[in-house]
Length: 212
Image (cartoon, rainbow, N blue to C red; front, side, top):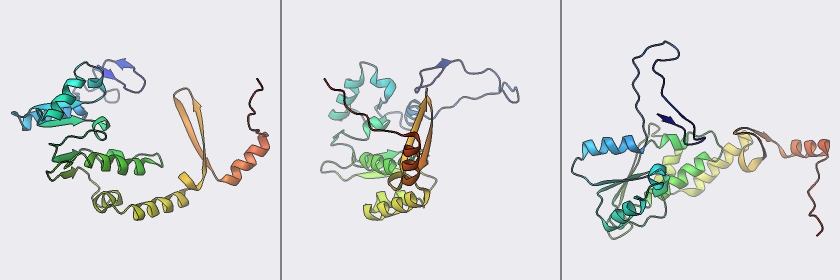
C-alpha cells in the first residue's frame, strides 16, 4: 500500500498506468528500507540497524540505539534522526546518500539547512581516537555547498547566500507573508516598502493585550 507520511493517507497502488493503461508497472522506492536491503545484499555478514520514523514508533528503537552504542552493529542506517546528537565512538565512516535532495529545495533556507545537516552528520565520524571519513553522494560535484563542507569556509558561504538573497529579495533582504489554506499554502515575498503600504491600506494595527 502507498502511505503518505505527511497527511497520513493510505491507498492501494494502481494496477495500470493512468496515462498509457499499461499494466507493466514496477514499484521501487528509495527510502531507508530499500537502502537497508541493498546494503544487506552487499554485506551479507554485517549486522545492520535502522532508525527512521517508522522504527521510532516501535519498541525496538532503544534496543537499536543500545546496539549501536555498544558496537554490536556494523552499519547504522537512518534519516535525519541519526545526523545529530549521537556520540558513537566506533563510527569511522559516514555516508550521506542522495545529498542533492537536500540542496535542491525551493525554500530559501534549504541551502543553509543542507549545509548544517550534512556537517552535523559528518561530525558523527571520528569522534574518538579513530580517524573519520565522510562520503557524500551527489551529481553536482561543482555545487558550492560541498566546497563549504570540505573547506569549512563559512564566511564565503554566508557571502554567497547574502548575494542570492539580495538578487531574489528572499530571506533577510525582505519580509515574507505566509498565507495558509488548509494544508495548501502560498508564500509571497514583498519588499518592505510594499508591506508598509499594504499595512497602511488595510489599516492593520498591532493587537493590544486585554485588560484583566
